Image 1: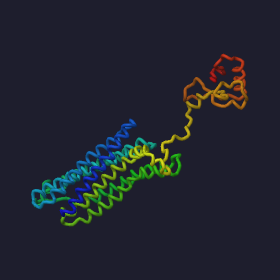
Image 2: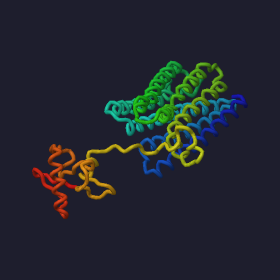
Image 3: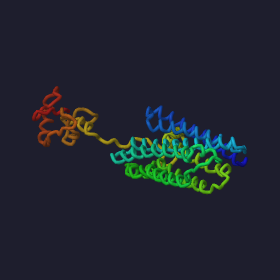
Image 4: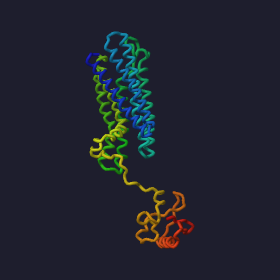
Amino acid sequence: MADDRVATLIGSTIGMICLTTLVISVRIMVRSNLRAYGLDDRFGKHHQDISIAAYEQFLKVSYLEDFENRRTDDIATKLTIVTSATYSYGLALAKMSFAVLYIRMLPGRRLIMMNKGIIAFLCCQAIEESLIPVFQCKPVAKAWTVEKEGVCLDLPVLWWCGFAFNLCSDLILFIEPIPTLWRLQLPLVKRLGLIAMLSLGLMVVAISVIRMHSVSQMGHDDTYDLAIPIIWSEAEISTLIVCSCVPSLRKMLQKLSWFHQVPGLSNPDMPHEPIETIGQARTKPLFRGKGGQKAGCTDESDLTGTTTYPLTVMSHPPLISDDVIKGAQESICDASREHTVTYSGHELTY
């Protein structure tokens, strides 16, 4: 491998290790402070651990392939096989973290079942893609010993099949939340911001295409041509890690003063007008006057609110006419110390 590509590979690997470690640390800190550390965060943490292991193998490969002798070539080939396996598991765990997040966030039984199916598919795909590089040849040792007699699988065909599966899973994962987010009762700018935040993973699709193009351009000198595909593989894993941490990074940025000056992002967590639940509606005072005082003796216009019944939340209260409510109001005015009026076996609480 030429010196310039060795330096480029080492520099990009170290940079991506620092970047992914930073964003994962921020994610864990934010989620722990919110007491919301969940399964998707565990997947993200394991993804980071496996990714660092893959980055270490990349560094070893770039170091060993700079020497030209048979022993180091065999070791470099073995490390390349290990790197391929760790890359497959790292990519699968990153996508699983998105699927687990969608199970928690998106409503609908069909979406939940679909995301569980995606998790199962990604698990099987990772196992398959990690075993193929190891058992690609017969005998197995021929995979890292070129001069050994035997036959091997046509790996480029398998690479393109894996690329097709990854492309489909990426498109499903990162387009899936768009319809649900678009139906949210939020301003258009905030809806577009949420969609963009959760769809940043579509950049992974573009990086995957570039990576496969670089793989298809590899010639006979694998030790030289392998550097560019390795760099794009690192970029693909790192992009997935960063995209999975964007919501937590947004929480961190909200603490900065200049962030609130960005249009559409100021006060992003401001609560909207509360929606009245069944229980809240039934616990309103029947007769409400000015200043929150009992208004049983005020005008007819003050007869606003909902009655409270000693029934369960799911039961249906009986219909009460306006004449009955007026009669109850007069009874309240006559009995200064009474707090309940009984009608048809049900207590009216004011």
